[in-house]
Image (cartoon, rainbow, N blue to C red):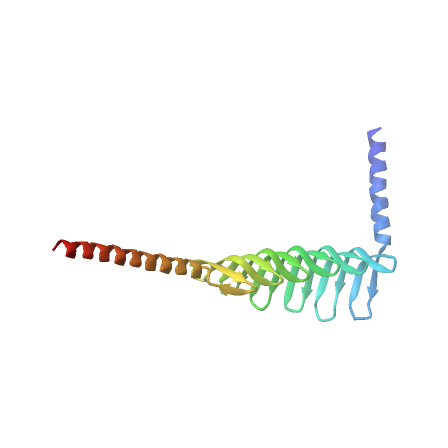
Length: 195
């Protein structure tokens, strides 16, 4: 009895493999690329692989002809591995560039967006919040020698977070100086009255 059930399961598995291979096609596309994968409604849908003549490639999921879901895209100097949504980097991913940097974190519309870690080949790095491709908010900057500093960015520009603190310290110092002068003046007047 068990062998009959096992044979039925094996037959079912082989049937699904055969069916999935029947729907995998290889096409030469107008842009010169070659696509191997699933097609539904005359569009790339499901898992597929696309190779361009210049060496660029995509391996991953498609939806309605666009990169969608998990995938790996080699595009010029960049290699991206992660989430796609309607053809763009969206979600979590890793972008490695031949220009000497690597970004690990969140993406939105092909830009760094959300928590992320950017490191250069020099080992200098930034860890923090990105908005539309720019650092924004508190960031930990690590130098190549391992020294760290906390910085505050707004729209990709460093903002001096210590400026308000320095102003407050100056105000307290001036206030203390004024109080000291008043106290010393009163003390001096009282001393001179007694003479």
